Image (cartoon, rainbow, N blue to C red):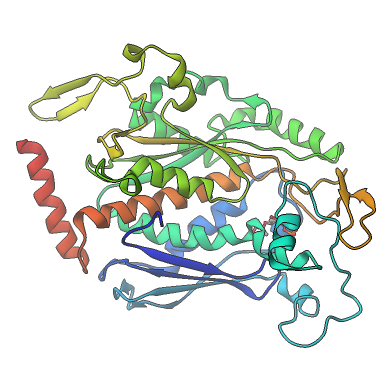
Length: 398
Ligand code: EPS
């Protein structure tokens, strides 16, 4: 629903053969390589506090269609990412036959996971049939799709980045003053610093402190959530529209972020904080200079007004709940015996906020590429570039 010009679907179970994604709507003649995608797949796999699974997987994409001699054809782009762990799950996740005796059905739903609601909805008594698909393993496919969209946007100078703002109750205090929302350079600097942090925090020197918090949580059999920030730079004014509810760019971004596993909150710009201030302390005053055109003195609204981008950096903060699988599990009920027992345990991560921030980048890229095509759409890159240039001239002359 949120996407208008691009379509994509993902398929695949967490311990099945792999993940498949089909992306349609990317124009012809965009240079694209597997490395463009693999770079982001690797970035998603990093992060202190991940479980044993990340030692097994070394995500790599195989482009199955839609690209010839290094350029897109305008046809659907099919992507495949193999699950290396499949080797260990072949029998337990077999496509054909009866379940072998080694399969113990998962019957003690974890509070916070899709186990029970999915089991009820799909009439499944082995809750593995739900958790295999609800798993955040699926986000590898979204990151692959997002990487293609990023490549498309980069042809127009649009850059996307992210960093982690907090993990559990531990925050980066330097990010409390949101004045930097106005400054593309600062946002980029935070992103680049985060690339050198095991936790994607913009002050890598503080990694140890955050790692201690994660170690503490792990020792207690606990998990942690957190907040990450995603931004887009050089977004032209005019993406999205005020004229209909489902065309509003902020609504489209929010839905995309909320669709990421474990996300419970999205803020654009100051978000909730804006509600506490006087109007004069929120709205971004307008200036104009001959060479620069219109500009803003602040970016409290995070680059969107009236459901339309306004030319300032798009800045989104996203809150992730703690991972539901706990080594020290909460109360649950066995779905067969109805006995009160503790929830089932699975191999798990303690925290996945750093990985989620890379997924957030992908979702923002998908939404912006879609809105960009809505405004400047065409079937091949050269045509879209021409339309974009005409619009840039219009902005200058306005
Ligand atoms: C996940 C559980 C863990 C995570 C997984 C998401 O996997 P496993 O059950 O194999 O240990 O590592 O994340 C990924 C596999 C990934 O690629 O991010 C879950 O239950 O959501």
